[in-house]
Length: 212
Image (tube, rainbow, N blue to C red; front, side, top):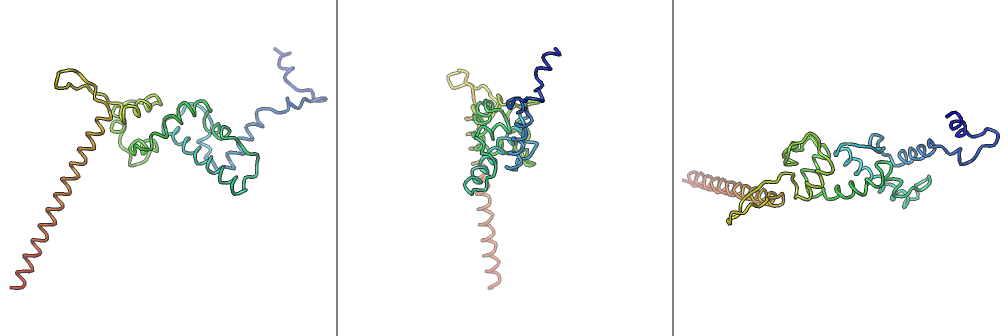
């Protein structure tokens, strides 16, 4: 064991250039990129994180990469140019980025409620209302299924007219919710219209009384 450890220490009399390039120099370069791009420190580094934090990392990557491209165009980039992968790996491993981040997060944009949830916005709905199912922890597997199912993890059975059982999925449920909202909106507009008509009738009646 002692021989192995000794063999890893470069000779001071004749140091090898390759052995004088330890991991801290790579870490230092990453830190230089993080500073240059203005990336919040808590969003950097790899490892398991919650879905909301992963989404923040994804958005921070988009901003960082756009910042890099803008600085290059403006000739204000003053250090060695990184590759796109270099910037990705400030936040997450390249493979996980493409298999999970890039696969799921761009699709979330059309679901306002999920965007608010991932951003941990104070106006976000509760977990059950967003996901359709109550869980202690929601994962990328849940998010992929949620997206595939049209915006919910909830699946319920129903029976057609012929008595056959049929699964009612999220896309159908969302359509029904939209229809309900539209009906409520129409009823609300009708009520407002009736109130306005009533106001006009009342105003006309008052004016006619004044003329008398």
